[in-house]
Image (cartoon, rainbow, N blue to C red; front, side, top):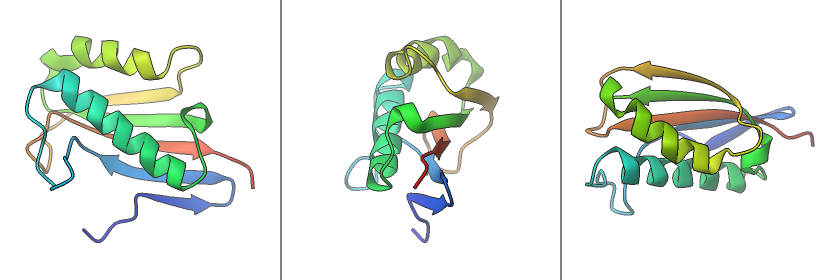
Length: 111
C-alpha cells in the first residue's frame, strides 16, 4: 500500500493506522482480543523502526468496528500501557478492511 508505517516530523513521530493483518495481508481471525494484540504489536513495530517505544507514545486514536468490543479491547490495551497511558480517543466506525480495530499513534522522541 502507498503509506509509510511511521513518519518523523521534528521531535514527533506519526504512526499510520494499523490493523490485525497477518504477514500475508489477511485479517486475523478470532475476534477483538487477538486482533487488538496483533494491531498493537504492529503499531509498536512501526514505531520501533522510527526509534520509538511505547513509552514515547503521547496520543493514540482507536477505531472499533463494534462498540460492544470496548471492554475486551480495553483489557488488552491496558496490558500494553500499564503505568502512564497516553491520551486516547476511541471511536466506533466501520473500517476499510474487515477488521475489528484500527489504531494509530503519535510519539514524542526528541532527536
